[in-house]
Structures are given as structure tokens and as C-alpha cells.
Image (cartoon, rainbow, N blue to C red; front, top):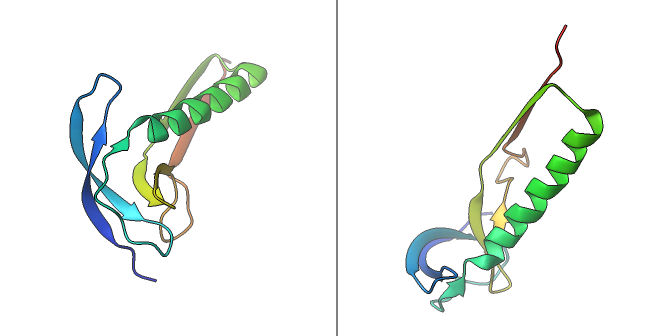
Length: 99
């Protein structure tokens, strides 16, 4: 399956419009309509909150989380994509405890 990528306009909460590259996830082609970037940031916020809650449960002395997000379009909505092609998520969590 070949993914279609396109440069689209997204609107930030302050009204600023920026152009981003988005990949079509479903069978539909990517439209030209400007999309609210909050469709992506909402997913990032939820992901970060869940990771934070889990890290707080295991109580490491030090923690770092690194993840990359690609922007996709699924059913006309922006979506944060952690996995692409190989189905491996781009998520790195490092937890450290003192000796």
C-alpha cells in the first residue's frame, strides 16, 4: 500500500496558519481544507498524560520520554501517527533508579 503525502494548511489556536506535510492513512485522498491543529495536539496531550501517569506509578529517580509524531489524515481529520509502515512505534522511554 502506497501512502499519499501532501502539504496542507493547519490552523493554530491563535489563528496562525502553517503548512505541514500530512500522510493519508485511509483510502480517501487528502483534501485542501484547512484543519485545526488541535486535532493533533489533543492526541499528543493525551499520550503525554498517560505516559506521565505511568511514570509516576513506578517512581523512578529520573525519567525521560522521547517520541516523534507524524501528521496523518484519516477520514478528513488530522491525527498523530506514532507508527508508520513497519508498525513499530517511535516511542523511547528511559527510567533510572539510583543505586
